[in-house]
Image (tube, rainbow over all chains, first blue to last red; front, side, top):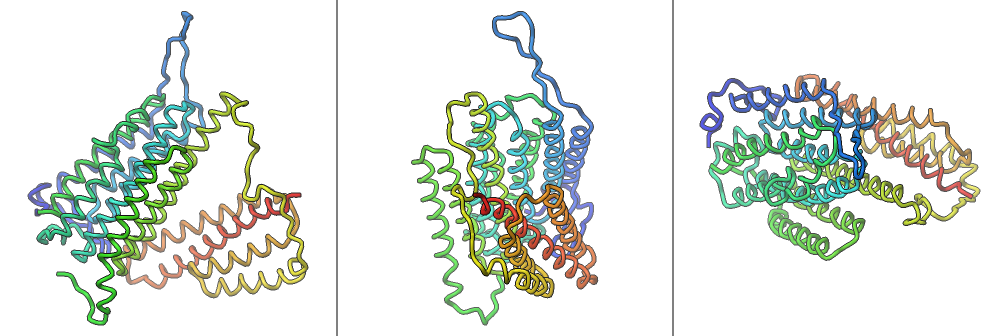
Length: 223
Length: 231
């Protein structure tokens, strides 16, 4: 499918050698929203959870230490930038790389927490993300092998051969696992049970946005 | 339309499908093994097997572009392994903190046993050999040069018995590595933005990679030395 059909009028292209970024209203909107959210995260402070204490009347504050706060903020900002890059990229393999990067950063954001259960689920999610890098990169490389290009502008003009369909299906599987949606969400949902709200939210937001973009890319490749 | 140069032998072309099937079968076997296993560390190691299958499937394409895909794939795989093992470590540490008696094993290192290297060649030759290796590495530049120069640094670090390198020096080597990484990135970006400056960007990337790899290998050698000289 032509990307004008999916994303609206073509506003312009940014040629960087082989890699040609194209800008449509859809990708520009997603890109700007993610950058604004990243900016909000960069200037915000972390929340403090108030928990009821067992067998007592007082409450306890669950705070985040300064070192942990700094590490988390840094990784969240990088995660936001990586998601923004995945929104605007015009290259299939750059998209898969940004996807894998987001997967690593999602693990990194929760890696400094003290709750053992959260670490446990982060570990499970990391295993799924690592296993899904096989279909993710494998799908991209099969598409490369059967079409000879990774540029989305060129790929969208090509008819889909059975091998391309196979590669796209593999890629879909990889994206589902890396971003931890539908069949793989069980461990990722548990990763949120920790203080530090605005930084944790980027885990969700990045996977939401990347699914929208992945649907666009798969439609571009398949039709 | 797929363009395949005429000088590529037919055997190479026919290897593509078996390689993909092989990699998928390896991935499947790895997943089965993960499903059967119960211990976390075994699962982590088996997951790396699936990562290797990913490398096979990407390298089966066998073009220049595919080679550009293998390196980031490898780096991503390595980073994920590191991140997950870090998670595993900190989880175990929190478990031990909560219940110190549960795990009575001591801290581990690269060589758990005391390991003294007492050879004459390690006291006489290494200065000269290390110098030659580093000079040759600088002459080579790039990844290979970095590995050769790093080998020289490792040899020097292994053979010299002075223990307890100050933290400042270790930090300094790590800083050089970081700056070299920036050089490499700048060279890489310049390559795309201004293709007519290719020779400058090539040399930036080559020298950056040289420093990067050399300092990394040197760091490994220094850390190993700390372990090896243990009495």
